[in-house]
Length: 336
Figure 1 (cartoon, rainbow, N blue to C red):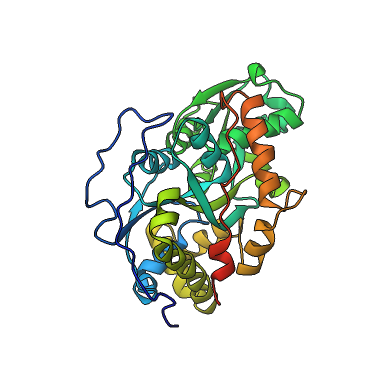
Figure 2 (tube, rainbow, N blue to C red):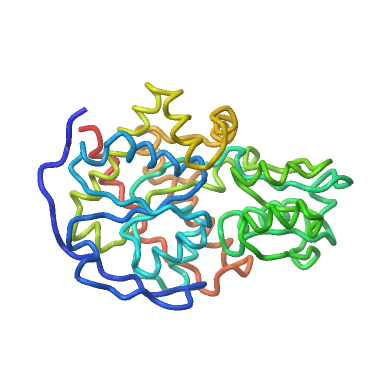
């Protein structure tokens, strides 16, 4: 595997001002991107964890970039760090990115599709609840504003349940799983590894998963528009590294599972179970999804649909603009 990088652009990354959920902004310094280092946020979700393999196997260096990974247990914390300018790039869902833009963030660019959740995100309920319709009048823990909040409202809508007919307990996903086990709520919306915590409660079970909503929760590598303009070679190297990482994982499945399982503190066999609920996108799938179209398989269609839903569901006051959000030049160039 050889580096595809030929040059480095050492320009600074402008700070992104605080948005919804950010209490204070982080100060921008000359060192923010000026040194050539890229700060990349990721978290425990199986579709984002492969970056840990990139780091462990020296794949960033092979592609000529200096990357500092920032691990966030909470999706909200990672999003807030990106919004405050503390990160150069972040792993975000399409829903979260659009919500951030609606809240006033500086323009961001989606430069690749890491994965889509095809069962990893779950609505887990206590004993006695057997279907989504049983959630009416129940307490449901969910992390406010993230993609699982959006997905929950989508599930409720499909079941004919008005959000006012349930009692939402807004808390971080790890806290929600703990509250569910303690009997403080009737249901919780979780993703791995917090699904394991929730299912420790006797009689608990999943009544809905993203397997029934395969295009609702897609995950992406997102960078600021400033970075795509001022450091396009670095963005390209990040995208190249992602696909190099997937190739390495495919050739070294056991070793990859051990690296990823260690990061989230579980056994490799348990991690493999988490990963089964996520579909990692190939390069060709990326190119196909970035191609404009009129179905849920097309990223532009997903973005428009989610933008409408965010406003209709009251998760955003202003409809986020989707024009210019998708930048497909990096996936098109990857591997060439």
